[in-house]
Length: 310
Image (cartoon, rainbow, N blue to C red; front, side, top):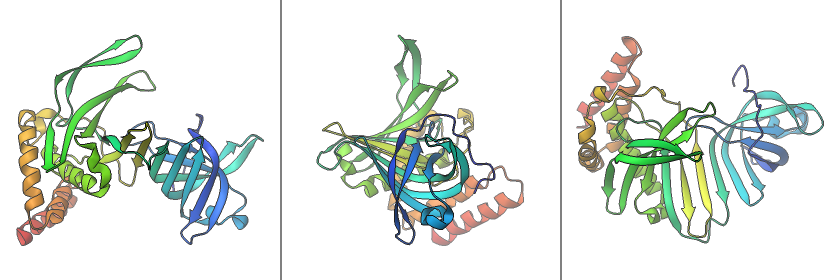
Protein backbone atom coordinates (compact mmCIF):
# COMPACT_ATOMS: atom_id res chain seq x y z
CA UNK A 1 0.00 0.00 0.00
CA UNK A 2 1.54 3.37 -1.00
CA UNK A 3 2.34 5.75 1.86
CA UNK A 4 0.92 8.70 -0.08
CA UNK A 5 -2.05 7.74 -2.29
CA UNK A 6 -2.24 9.65 -5.60
CA UNK A 7 -4.18 12.85 -6.01
CA UNK A 8 -7.11 12.83 -8.43
CA UNK A 9 -7.47 16.28 -9.97
CA UNK A 10 -9.14 15.28 -13.27
CA UNK A 11 -12.61 14.03 -14.11
CA UNK A 12 -12.98 10.22 -14.09
CA UNK A 13 -13.45 8.33 -17.34
CA UNK A 14 -16.33 6.20 -16.05
CA UNK A 15 -18.76 6.62 -13.15
CA UNK A 16 -21.50 4.30 -11.96
CA UNK A 17 -22.69 1.56 -9.63
CA UNK A 18 -20.18 -1.29 -9.72
CA UNK A 19 -20.61 -4.92 -8.70
CA UNK A 20 -17.71 -5.72 -6.37
CA UNK A 21 -16.61 -9.22 -5.40
CA UNK A 22 -14.14 -10.14 -2.70
CA UNK A 23 -11.90 -13.23 -2.63
CA UNK A 24 -14.59 -14.99 -0.60
CA UNK A 25 -17.21 -14.44 -3.31
CA UNK A 26 -19.14 -11.75 -1.47
CA UNK A 27 -21.04 -9.41 -3.85
CA UNK A 28 -21.62 -5.72 -3.06
CA UNK A 29 -22.90 -2.88 -5.23
CA UNK A 30 -21.04 0.35 -4.57
CA UNK A 31 -20.71 3.70 -6.33
CA UNK A 32 -17.32 4.05 -8.02
CA UNK A 33 -15.36 5.93 -10.67
CA UNK A 34 -12.54 4.72 -12.94
CA UNK A 35 -9.46 6.61 -14.15
CA UNK A 36 -7.91 5.10 -17.29
CA UNK A 37 -4.12 5.35 -17.76
CA UNK A 38 -2.68 8.30 -19.68
CA UNK A 39 0.41 6.40 -20.85
CA UNK A 40 1.50 2.83 -21.59
CA UNK A 41 2.89 2.26 -18.08
CA UNK A 42 0.74 4.64 -16.00
CA UNK A 43 -1.29 3.04 -13.24
CA UNK A 44 -5.06 2.46 -13.35
CA UNK A 45 -7.19 3.61 -10.43
CA UNK A 46 -10.70 3.18 -9.12
CA UNK A 47 -12.31 5.20 -6.34
CA UNK A 48 -14.98 3.43 -4.31
CA UNK A 49 -17.62 5.19 -2.26
CA UNK A 50 -17.75 2.74 0.60
CA UNK A 51 -19.39 2.88 3.98
CA UNK A 52 -17.52 2.26 7.21
CA UNK A 53 -15.29 -0.86 7.37
CA UNK A 54 -17.78 -2.57 9.63
CA UNK A 55 -20.50 -2.33 6.96
CA UNK A 56 -18.51 -3.30 3.84
CA UNK A 57 -16.45 -6.41 3.15
CA UNK A 58 -14.91 -4.72 0.10
CA UNK A 59 -13.38 -2.01 2.28
CA UNK A 60 -11.64 -4.53 4.54
CA UNK A 61 -10.47 -6.78 1.68
CA UNK A 62 -6.92 -6.37 0.38
CA UNK A 63 -7.89 -7.61 -3.11
CA UNK A 64 -11.19 -7.61 -4.98
CA UNK A 65 -12.74 -7.32 -8.46
CA UNK A 66 -15.40 -5.14 -10.05
CA UNK A 67 -17.75 -5.05 -13.04
CA UNK A 68 -19.25 -1.72 -14.08
CA UNK A 69 -21.83 -1.12 -16.81
CA UNK A 70 -21.96 2.48 -18.01
CA UNK A 71 -23.71 3.79 -21.16
CA UNK A 72 -23.11 0.74 -23.34
CA UNK A 73 -19.60 0.11 -21.99
CA UNK A 74 -18.73 -2.78 -19.69
CA UNK A 75 -15.63 -2.50 -17.50
CA UNK A 76 -14.23 -5.68 -15.96
CA UNK A 77 -11.49 -5.10 -13.39
CA UNK A 78 -10.21 -8.61 -12.68
CA UNK A 79 -7.74 -7.61 -10.00
CA UNK A 80 -7.91 -4.55 -7.72
CA UNK A 81 -5.64 -3.99 -4.74
CA UNK A 82 -6.63 -1.92 -1.71
CA UNK A 83 -4.26 1.09 -1.87
CA UNK A 84 -5.40 3.45 0.87
CA UNK A 85 -7.85 6.33 1.11
CA UNK A 86 -8.34 9.81 -0.31
CA UNK A 87 -10.90 12.61 -0.17
CA UNK A 88 -13.40 12.72 -3.04
CA UNK A 89 -16.55 14.74 -3.63
CA UNK A 90 -19.49 12.45 -4.41
CA UNK A 91 -21.83 15.48 -4.85
CA UNK A 92 -22.26 16.31 -1.16
CA UNK A 93 -18.75 17.41 -0.25
CA UNK A 94 -15.50 15.53 0.24
CA UNK A 95 -15.77 12.04 1.73
CA UNK A 96 -13.20 9.51 2.86
CA UNK A 97 -12.94 7.26 -0.21
CA UNK A 98 -11.23 3.94 -0.87
CA UNK A 99 -8.48 3.96 -3.52
CA UNK A 100 -7.99 0.79 -5.57
CA UNK A 101 -5.08 0.07 -7.92
CA UNK A 102 -6.16 -2.03 -10.92
CA UNK A 103 -3.69 -4.43 -12.52
CA UNK A 104 -6.00 -6.08 -15.08
CA UNK A 105 -8.80 -4.15 -16.77
CA UNK A 106 -10.96 -4.94 -19.83
CA UNK A 107 -13.27 -2.35 -21.39
CA UNK A 108 -15.89 -3.65 -23.85
CA UNK A 109 -17.73 -1.08 -25.98
CA UNK A 110 -20.70 -2.38 -27.94
CA UNK A 111 -21.65 -5.98 -28.72
CA UNK A 112 -18.34 -7.85 -28.69
CA UNK A 113 -19.85 -11.35 -28.65
CA UNK A 114 -21.73 -11.58 -31.96
CA UNK A 115 -19.18 -10.27 -34.45
CA UNK A 116 -15.85 -11.26 -35.95
CA UNK A 117 -12.55 -9.61 -35.04
CA UNK A 118 -11.47 -7.23 -37.81
CA UNK A 119 -8.34 -5.79 -36.19
CA UNK A 120 -5.96 -6.63 -33.34
CA UNK A 121 -3.37 -4.14 -32.11
CA UNK A 122 -0.98 -4.56 -29.18
CA UNK A 123 0.82 -1.82 -27.22
CA UNK A 124 4.43 -2.32 -26.12
CA UNK A 125 6.86 -0.32 -24.01
CA UNK A 126 9.40 1.79 -25.97
CA UNK A 127 11.79 -0.09 -28.25
CA UNK A 128 14.58 1.19 -30.50
CA UNK A 129 14.57 -1.95 -32.65
CA UNK A 130 10.83 -2.39 -33.23
CA UNK A 131 9.78 1.16 -34.05
CA UNK A 132 9.47 2.54 -37.54
CA UNK A 133 11.30 5.67 -38.71
CA UNK A 134 8.82 8.41 -39.57
CA UNK A 135 8.57 12.05 -40.54
CA UNK A 136 5.90 13.58 -38.32
CA UNK A 137 4.24 16.93 -39.05
CA UNK A 138 1.12 18.70 -37.88
CA UNK A 139 -1.70 19.80 -40.16
CA UNK A 140 -4.88 21.47 -38.93
CA UNK A 141 -4.15 20.34 -35.41
CA UNK A 142 -3.66 16.69 -36.37
CA UNK A 143 -0.42 14.70 -36.51
CA UNK A 144 0.49 13.42 -39.97
CA UNK A 145 3.03 10.62 -40.33
CA UNK A 146 5.13 9.71 -43.36
CA UNK A 147 6.92 6.37 -43.01
CA UNK A 148 10.59 6.53 -43.96
CA UNK A 149 11.47 3.01 -42.77
CA UNK A 150 8.93 0.37 -41.82
CA UNK A 151 9.17 -1.57 -38.59
CA UNK A 152 9.98 -5.32 -38.72
CA UNK A 153 7.53 -8.11 -39.46
CA UNK A 154 7.93 -11.35 -37.50
CA UNK A 155 6.32 -14.62 -38.62
CA UNK A 156 6.05 -16.85 -35.58
CA UNK A 157 4.07 -19.78 -36.97
CA UNK A 158 1.63 -20.51 -39.82
CA UNK A 159 -1.11 -17.90 -39.52
CA UNK A 160 0.51 -15.83 -36.78
CA UNK A 161 2.67 -12.86 -37.79
CA UNK A 162 3.22 -9.47 -36.15
CA UNK A 163 3.91 -6.12 -37.82
CA UNK A 164 5.59 -3.43 -35.68
CA UNK A 165 5.47 0.34 -36.13
CA UNK A 166 5.53 3.64 -34.25
CA UNK A 167 2.55 5.71 -33.11
CA UNK A 168 2.57 9.35 -32.03
CA UNK A 169 0.52 11.68 -29.87
CA UNK A 170 0.77 14.99 -28.07
CA UNK A 171 1.44 14.72 -24.35
CA UNK A 172 -0.35 16.79 -21.72
CA UNK A 173 2.54 19.28 -21.85
CA UNK A 174 2.27 19.57 -25.64
CA UNK A 175 5.39 17.50 -26.34
CA UNK A 176 5.44 14.82 -29.03
CA UNK A 177 5.37 11.28 -27.58
CA UNK A 178 5.95 8.04 -29.47
CA UNK A 179 5.01 4.45 -28.66
CA UNK A 180 5.45 1.07 -30.31
CA UNK A 181 2.39 -0.64 -31.76
CA UNK A 182 2.09 -4.16 -33.06
CA UNK A 183 -0.61 -5.40 -35.43
CA UNK A 184 -1.61 -9.03 -35.76
CA UNK A 185 -1.45 -9.56 -39.52
CA UNK A 186 -4.38 -11.99 -39.46
CA UNK A 187 -6.75 -10.65 -36.76
CA UNK A 188 -8.93 -13.78 -36.93
CA UNK A 189 -6.17 -15.56 -34.99
CA UNK A 190 -7.46 -13.74 -31.89
CA UNK A 191 -10.17 -16.40 -31.79
CA UNK A 192 -7.57 -18.13 -29.64
CA UNK A 193 -6.11 -15.22 -27.61
CA UNK A 194 -3.80 -17.44 -25.55
CA UNK A 195 -2.03 -18.71 -28.66
CA UNK A 196 -1.54 -15.23 -30.12
CA UNK A 197 -0.38 -13.75 -26.80
CA UNK A 198 2.01 -16.64 -26.17
CA UNK A 199 3.53 -16.08 -29.62
CA UNK A 200 3.98 -12.36 -28.98
CA UNK A 201 5.54 -13.12 -25.59
CA UNK A 202 8.19 -15.22 -27.37
CA UNK A 203 8.88 -12.38 -29.81
CA UNK A 204 9.30 -9.85 -26.99
CA UNK A 205 11.73 -12.16 -25.16
CA UNK A 206 13.95 -12.31 -28.25
CA UNK A 207 13.75 -8.55 -28.82
CA UNK A 208 14.54 -7.91 -25.15
CA UNK A 209 17.70 -9.98 -25.56
CA UNK A 210 18.67 -8.09 -28.72
CA UNK A 211 17.96 -4.68 -27.18
CA UNK A 212 19.44 -5.46 -23.77
CA UNK A 213 16.34 -4.20 -21.96
CA UNK A 214 13.06 -5.81 -20.94
CA UNK A 215 10.12 -5.04 -23.22
CA UNK A 216 6.59 -5.45 -21.93
CA UNK A 217 3.16 -5.88 -23.47
CA UNK A 218 0.98 -3.30 -21.71
CA UNK A 219 -2.36 -3.95 -23.42
CA UNK A 220 -4.22 -4.46 -26.66
CA UNK A 221 -7.24 -3.30 -28.63
CA UNK A 222 -9.59 -5.47 -30.66
CA UNK A 223 -11.99 -4.01 -33.21
CA UNK A 224 -14.98 -5.95 -34.53
CA UNK A 225 -16.83 -5.90 -37.82
CA UNK A 226 -19.92 -4.40 -36.18
CA UNK A 227 -17.94 -1.43 -34.78
CA UNK A 228 -17.56 -2.76 -31.23
CA UNK A 229 -14.18 -2.70 -29.47
CA UNK A 230 -12.37 -4.43 -26.62
CA UNK A 231 -9.49 -2.69 -24.87
CA UNK A 232 -7.32 -4.48 -22.33
CA UNK A 233 -4.93 -2.75 -19.93
CA UNK A 234 -2.33 -4.83 -18.08
CA UNK A 235 -0.31 -3.43 -15.19
CA UNK A 236 0.70 -6.62 -13.41
CA UNK A 237 4.42 -5.95 -13.89
CA UNK A 238 7.14 -3.58 -12.75
CA UNK A 239 7.37 -0.75 -15.27
CA UNK A 240 10.70 -0.84 -17.14
CA UNK A 241 12.86 2.23 -17.53
CA UNK A 242 11.46 4.81 -19.95
CA UNK A 243 14.95 5.84 -20.97
CA UNK A 244 15.53 5.44 -24.69
CA UNK A 245 17.93 2.70 -25.79
CA UNK A 246 20.95 3.90 -27.74
CA UNK A 247 20.68 2.11 -31.07
CA UNK A 248 24.48 1.70 -31.12
CA UNK A 249 24.45 -0.35 -27.89
CA UNK A 250 22.02 -3.07 -28.96
CA UNK A 251 23.37 -6.59 -29.51
CA UNK A 252 21.78 -6.79 -32.95
CA UNK A 253 22.06 -4.04 -35.55
CA UNK A 254 18.85 -2.33 -36.62
CA UNK A 255 19.30 -3.40 -40.25
CA UNK A 256 19.40 -7.08 -39.18
CA UNK A 257 16.57 -7.11 -36.66
CA UNK A 258 13.84 -8.59 -38.90
CA UNK A 259 15.97 -11.52 -40.05
CA UNK A 260 17.24 -12.05 -36.49
CA UNK A 261 13.70 -12.05 -35.09
CA UNK A 262 12.32 -14.57 -37.55
CA UNK A 263 15.21 -17.00 -37.14
CA UNK A 264 15.53 -16.69 -33.37
CA UNK A 265 11.83 -17.05 -32.60
CA UNK A 266 11.68 -20.25 -34.63
CA UNK A 267 14.72 -21.57 -32.74
CA UNK A 268 13.25 -20.59 -29.38
CA UNK A 269 9.92 -22.30 -30.05
CA UNK A 270 11.58 -25.47 -31.31
CA UNK A 271 13.86 -26.02 -28.30
CA UNK A 272 12.98 -28.47 -25.52
CA UNK A 273 12.47 -25.91 -22.75
CA UNK A 274 11.60 -22.48 -24.21
CA UNK A 275 10.32 -21.27 -20.84
CA UNK A 276 13.67 -21.94 -19.17
CA UNK A 277 15.53 -20.18 -21.96
CA UNK A 278 13.31 -17.09 -21.66
CA UNK A 279 13.79 -17.14 -17.90
CA UNK A 280 17.56 -17.16 -18.34
CA UNK A 281 17.32 -14.18 -20.73
CA UNK A 282 15.25 -12.17 -18.26
CA UNK A 283 17.55 -13.13 -15.37
CA UNK A 284 20.46 -11.62 -17.26
CA UNK A 285 18.55 -8.47 -18.23
CA UNK A 286 17.22 -7.85 -14.71
CA UNK A 287 20.74 -8.23 -13.35
CA UNK A 288 22.06 -5.15 -15.11
CA UNK A 289 22.96 -1.92 -13.27
CA UNK A 290 22.81 -3.32 -9.74
CA UNK A 291 26.39 -3.30 -8.58
CA UNK A 292 28.49 -6.46 -8.45
CA UNK A 293 26.68 -8.99 -6.25
CA UNK A 294 23.23 -8.94 -7.81
CA UNK A 295 24.26 -9.33 -11.48
CA UNK A 296 26.76 -12.08 -10.60
CA UNK A 297 24.15 -14.21 -8.87
CA UNK A 298 21.48 -13.62 -11.52
CA UNK A 299 23.87 -14.29 -14.41
CA UNK A 300 25.16 -17.42 -12.66
CA UNK A 301 21.61 -18.76 -12.34
CA UNK A 302 20.93 -17.98 -15.99
CA UNK A 303 24.12 -19.67 -17.22
CA UNK A 304 23.52 -22.67 -14.95
CA UNK A 305 20.05 -23.03 -16.41
CA UNK A 306 21.36 -22.94 -19.96
CA UNK A 307 24.16 -25.44 -19.31
CA UNK A 308 21.98 -27.91 -17.42
CA UNK A 309 19.20 -27.89 -20.01
CA UNK A 310 20.97 -27.32 -23.31
